[in-house]
Length: 118
Image 1 (cartoon, rainbow, N blue to C red):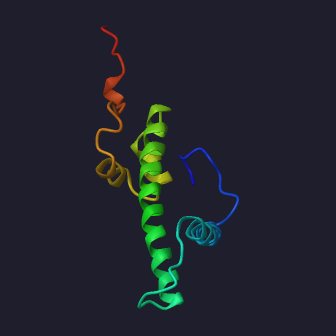
Image 2: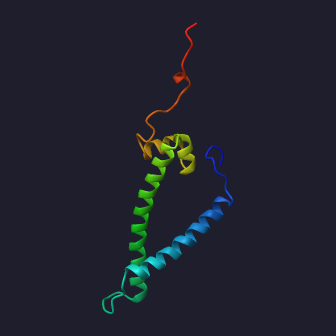
Image 3: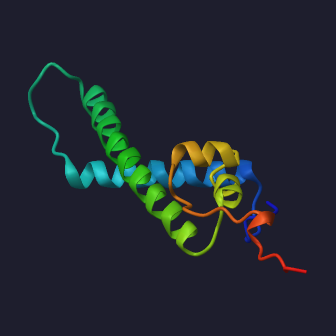
């Protein structure tokens, strides 16, 4: 992707498949570590497993949102502007600005350069 200062080794579709598989593996591992199946109840084991996975995915989404926010701030602190942050986030510059208002406190524009007084 031009303007984001890294190159892709895989296509977007391959990255999507890679991350979906990794998240699925992670969720299964976290569910096994965080939850204990109860021996009683109205739910079948398949239903209990599906609900536990759903609950873990909610926690993961919240964690990803926090991490995404931190990464956007880190990118801005490192000098990236809304155009680069938007492209890296798969959104427009305006979308990034709406998502993280105030992230960039100063957008350099051509009129910000010092003018000579001739």
